Length: 239
View (cartoon, rainbow, N blue to C red):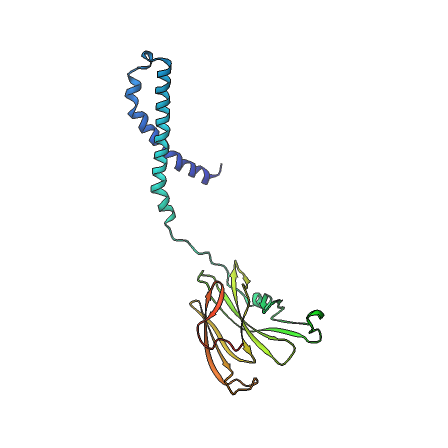
């Protein structure tokens, strides 16, 4: 028999047995008076049923009282978070990312492919690269997650940058939702994770800047809401 099952059964049965014993001890005087010979069969049956029913009621009451006292103590202990091995660079380099409306799986940090002809872009190559990253706990569960910085070219002159939160799913990486698009032809400086907050340093375009040459230094901050990055600074994106 399973030891844990036996232990649980004993914990439940013990208060019931004590309650029954206490009840029978109280009722011993009734039995000691030897009243059954003077009773009719119907009366004796009623007395026996009363004793049995009362003993069962007392047993259930004793079990309920034990549960009321013991179970809250058992469930009052704080939950223990299970931590998993931190994500690795290999996991980020070979993960499937959701960028815009496409799911793109990288191989060693890169993916170049020609879209289907029906999309009208069959003559252009789409390229996606993992250009930067940061490790840290994004959702407060004690496991090390990551932020991936992705660069995507649609075959033209545009080069778009994205932020993709990658969560530690029992030691493997998993992205939820779409990557956050930052803008076209930015100059990315750094990304970091501190206490669940993501900080990005980059050069963005000013009102008179050409697309080739952004001149405005920005520090963007992001927090996590419903497994999605939410920017808390302005401007958050050029798109």
